[in-house]
Length: 309
Ligand code: SF4
Image 1 (cartoon, rainbow, N blue to C red):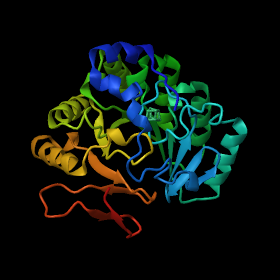
Image 2: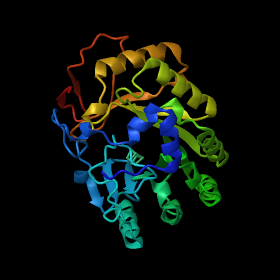
Image 3: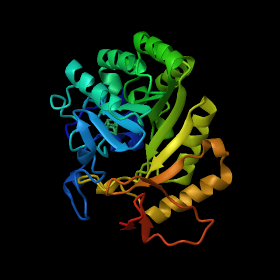
Image 4: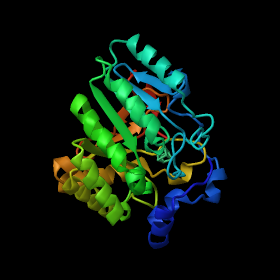
């Protein structure tokens, strides 16, 4: 994966090592000690037409681009993210996606992701308009890290479009945010502006060893987000992707932190902690220490026993 870091994040990384570690490459990316793969979630298997992943019955994920405002070193899609040419989506590709969705009437939700869909604003606007005309699509979600990685990309034009979409469909916007240091004045203004569009705001994060695998850091992050009106939605166990093992925290440590957070935070500040099953079969909720369990294996959505890594 190529290195790309916005000037906003370069400045921030000078003050925060937690930010720097996420975006500057490490020699550890070349160390492969575990059973990693390039695509542990088997997304390629579920690509039905170019740019459309259909893994769960009722929703599709749209990779609108493979570009981002900055490339996170721990990206699950690092096998393809930054290959901008390969990820280019044409109007014809959008039409094929729409035809596919129409052929599957159970689909009621579309998630715009990538890469970061806010790095291709014109394409995002035109596609949102097309999808909002599909009567079977009731929920539209946009997943982005732009409020953190380059808040200037949230232009008046895109915000106005979000306001319009919000009138037509139930509209969620999920912000990828890892550490309270990322809540700069610019990011706070971006969140305020997004709130004004009427979108339901969610956040998602990944447990990252040495960055946010700490009770104090996550308590601070989730409290601040809930105060801002952003509902912490998911925190993922880092996926077993080739080149990012050094970011993976021990699951026992994560569970201990989540248990303490559950005791001390309001329910609305507490996200789902999940492991994305390495055979692409779903987001498995991790248990809390209130119950007796062992962490050596879990059962996925297909009732298959998976050995914990
Ligand atoms: S913003 Fe998301 S898609 Fe882009 S590099 Fe980071 S994790 Fe990957």
